[in-house]
Length: 206
Image: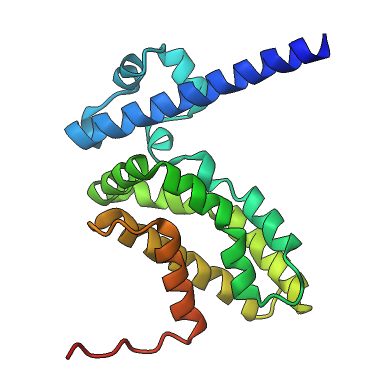
């Protein structure tokens, strides 16, 4: 009986994930084709073959369907950061904590490239994307302060958090925008290595 209940729960969860993914893909595709102001929730729902009522079971509004993604859930990142060995430098600990998110985003590369293109075309979406990270960044500051044994008002934890966020965001934009076929992980490692090195000026091209 327990196995049957677990199997049913697993099927429901998979169906929910698929429905959410279908709504997101439909929203991004339609907005990329028509523009943000010319797409409605009803049209997104129809393209995903669900009702508008079902849409609102997953998203509060059209903009949320465009910017929200399970890969952006900060809880696993904060948990991995807290679990990193104490001898690992804070910046490196943040980089390692991002591994699962990097893999999840890489697995949906075309969707993310479309998402970032839509956001670039509709800058009003950017604050919503950034706002979703605020709670995560606050939690990261607290964890880093604990790791370093400093107070919450010390400048280092928020600096590490802010610089890490900027490095990750820069890496994602480079990965999504160009024709470079390297995985996201390479771009993130490159950005974090530059920060760790003190951001030296790159050599002048000969």
